[in-house]
Structures are given as C-alpha cells and as structure tokens.
Image (cartoon, rainbow, N blue to C red; front, side, top):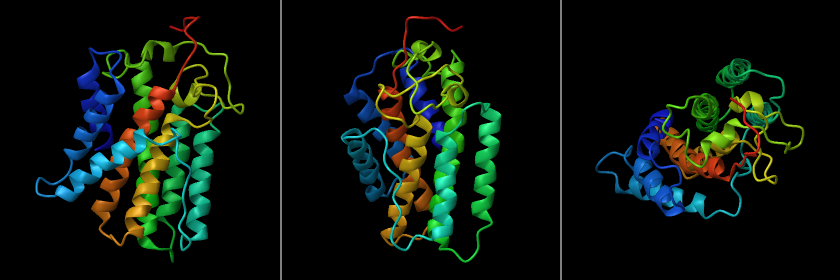
Length: 241
C-alpha cells in the first residue's frame, strides 16, 4: 500500500515538476482515502484529516511518541530503529535495510509485551524499510514519476550542508542532502515516525484491529513523507551524474 501510493502519486506528477501545496494536499488525501472501504466514511474522513493536519504542522518531522503504558523493552527497540535511520554514515542501502530488518525481527520475537503496541511498532518499522527503498529509487531512477518533482535533479547533486555529521549519501544514494539546513531528520524517518505515532494513537483509541492499525499508520506516513521531501533542498551548483 505504501509503495503503491507513491507509485500512483508519481504517475500524477511525472510530467509536472512543481505541483502546488494545495495540489499536493488534495492528491495525497485522495490517494490515501482510496484505500478505505467504500462504505467507511470515517476512514475517508480520517485520511483527509490526517493529510491536512500533517501539512499544517509547524515541523516537517514528528517526534516519536510513547504512551505511558508503552513497554520499555519495545521502546528500546524503537529507539534503536530511529537511531539506525539517523546514523547511516558509511552504509550502503542494502546494509541499511538489513539492519532495519534485524530490528524488525527482534521486535517480532518480543514476548510479554502489549501485542497491539507491538503491531503498531512493526507497522512503523515496515514503513521505514519500504520508505528507504522507495526514496532511494526516486532519486536514482530518472523514470520514476517523482524523480523530477521538486527539482529532483537537484537531489542528485552535491551539497555542502551536513547536519550532525549525518551522511545522507547512503540512505538516498546522493551526496549530502539536508533539510533546509535546519531539520536533522530524513524523509525516511518522517515516514516511519508518522506511521508509528498514528498506529500507536489508533491503539490508544481502543481499536485493536490489526488491519486498521496498519492502514492508519500508512495514511499518516504518506503526507509526512511527501512534506519532508518537499522540505528537502540540495545545492544545485555542481553536477553529480
């Protein structure tokens, strides 16, 4: 669902390099809502609400949120996951994905923890893994519909800004790409944090349906990832082919 949604968005924008913010909000919300059951008005409303909320947020990347009754062991694994997203210096994409897969396996093996929160966390980790693959493809594949959106070509060029010594090369396959020189989180992290937070909030709201938890997380991840992508700027002075 996550990768398919971005494929569809890419098809909409493959011949349009600079969609407006209003177009983005409308298209992302519509795609997210299309995964809802046809008779589930609440799901559709949530898709639009989540998109609007994300695009109006003061920050492009959320902070991880943990309820008071969130298991400490589960939290430790999630912090390891977020740390892996931030500290990718010197790793190839394959190495990065392998590390994230190991973290997912460790969470799956956890016992005596809240199963719903565990599933919400797994939903976020899975989104992070798919997101890493997706955005690497977006940047490196000129045929991907989102490659040229928001000056995608610039994202394959050298930049001098480095944030907290993060090496952006291996997560995106591009030399040093930061967030307006201010935000020190990646597009992938924006994706994963939004998915995990929303999935967890769904559990907090009393919904224990595994499918609903996953769908809620992905719906939140879509606008969060797109917003972070459009907040990403790279220097366009030097080519990197």
